[in-house]
Length: 129
Image (tube, rainbow, N blue to C red; front, side, top):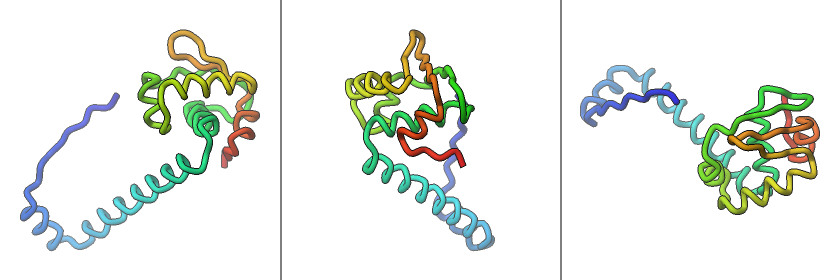
């Protein structure tokens, strides 16, 4: 995990800095806009995809491969993954069970074995481009 440092800038100081450097204001607004677009895409994915599709996409994004098989280690506890994917931990377990039929198997130690990344991508409509 990365270290994070937080700093507080009083509103009047920030306002003065932004008035003195309008280019900084535009860069900040651009960054906020990109982050908002990313969040809107995530919300759309949560609403429009099944739990199995969301989990499949998450697993593909954790893998560094676009063909063949792979074994990945989940970066978080399953409860956190379930929250991130908009489901309960119980639903996550049932979803992993569903994905067994297309070659996704959980192993001890938060490991997941994917026998065929391409088949998993086809299943959830994931594009590697």
